[in-house]
Length: 485
Image 1 (cartoon, rainbow, N blue to C red):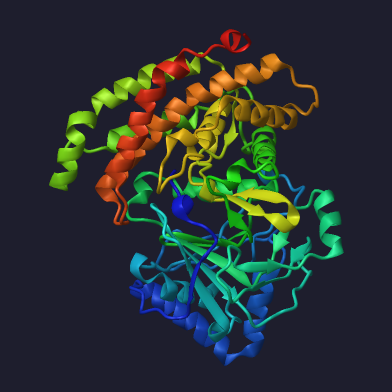
Image 2: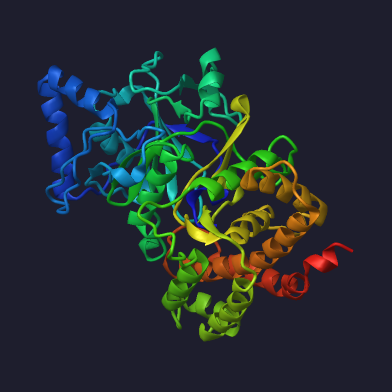
């Protein structure tokens, strides 16, 4: 629920205009100094660009002092087989603060540093549909048509379209692309497109941004995330994955949903955080995050109208805490495996690339170890939509059983899955979907107090909590034995 793509699709209006961002003086000076030095010496510009595009096995440490940062000079593309535990990847940091109201100009300032040889007159900026946590802008450099393979790994040439069709890029697929994919190497896309994501107001209360960056790099190492190019004071710059985000219809398409099930199973089966001890059982994300969110929900909202709406149902917050704690005690006893999970697989966070017949998950703000059944149950709950939530869309039993069987085949790495195994996971998934409803209820209450995005968070909190109450008895009464009858 928690990302900018909650209501985002890879469609939108292209703009080349923008005002002046409110940038810290030291940051703006650094940017201008960098650009001036590049214009004084073409050879220096070429050197910087070569360093930015070179293999990322060497990194430059990020300065802890925002006034005197050291900008990393190398792109981050760790080798597919490299053990992330052997090296700590340092993400380039650009000391710029971008205003939510002026993301286009902010993106331009960032490009001056991370893409110094780009001619900004040849860059088109596409503001994606605003989500309900962050803002997103795509930067399309249209001057160069030939792509270099010097960094290793297959690249897909892409160009922007002039029409407003569902895809904003056309992928021209070469014969070598299929062979590269079969070899297990992650497909890497053109360096002439980058995405800039600007964090929403006060989202640092909800998100551990350092952990998010580490998740990005970790998943990229496994071929499960795009390249992360840089961070800035209130956002990220990363690789664009061409395709279309799912909606309530496409997520049910027989050519798409198995891809999602297998992709999730791949993440759950493969990904391990470095330096983890096998003897120590990770604390599930759903417990840690929900408790921290409950601690932050105010007993009195600053907006009087919002306070009036929430006080009868959600305040004092101790009532909601008690409800969650009782549910968690029950769910913990189900012994669902604890795996590295995405934890926010709403439809806008799943990108389908038709030409490659693949799906990719984006936005890793909440990625962490969690119960396997939560990640799946949360995805099922998100199939009901966001802007126009309709819980009659919650996937029916027959669909779930087919989905879960495909998932288990990939997760367990065997073709024969017993009916009992599917039935057990079915029960766990639907019961953990209840925890998903409470989690995003609490999240919505926090957003209602702090977010500046125009969205009815209080209304969404009621939608999620009412669905929890409506399904609680039904889901908690499920048993694998009963379902086998």
